[in-house]
Image (cartoon, rainbow, N blue to C red; front, side, top):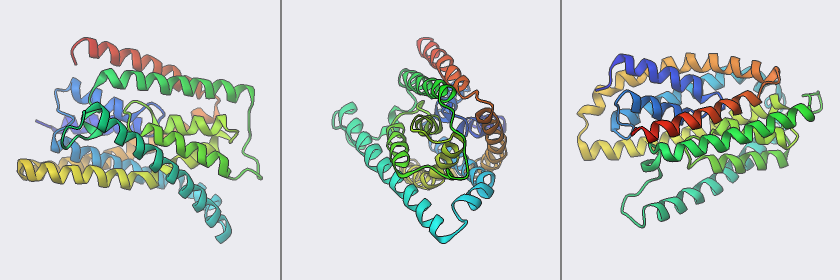
Length: 290
């Protein structure tokens, strides 16, 4: 049974981890398992949808001034920025969609109603995904120290090539909980030569575009589950989920401020170290029977 304490803990975990390059999905799943909750149950799905919505609004509020000065300063700038976001999102959709279909057809061997979400609570899959993300962040952090790039006046945003690469890597993140979307996309931008602050801004702009689609997908799953099991349990979960969204919003704002400070301080690589340590901890929990 989900209590207020459960909602509070999960909202803080989601709000902090969603906007840091450490995979919120991995952290939320582990927290749910440790608290004896079922990540696949309809109330938990509803809560997850609302938590993502809360952090999406945190991203919009936090980056609005920077986006307004960069992406909305003129019609020409808006068109250019929109084209790059669209290109990146198309790459994400094509690569991510193809991977999801391949995994669903191979991992479930043609079972009816097979969904990639059925694998999301498997800690034995989350641990290696965390490790891969951690290695990518470490590489980007080392590269940035050796080849620093400043966000000068002539480098207001990522270019088309960088946008395509970031979008493609974001697509690889979609099927795998534990493979941090923000960690992978910001690291890819840095490795492609973008200033880290620009890569951060562009990554979260993509998150604003991606989140409604992810929320819609989870919402459809929620409706299907509600029809199958009855709607009483879902109705009782509405208020806790709304509360969770509000709490995740404020936790997300704190996380974004911290992330920016760490980016500016040249300590990006430490997030990679954390992901590797988290991967080891998740694998230990799996071996312990969680």
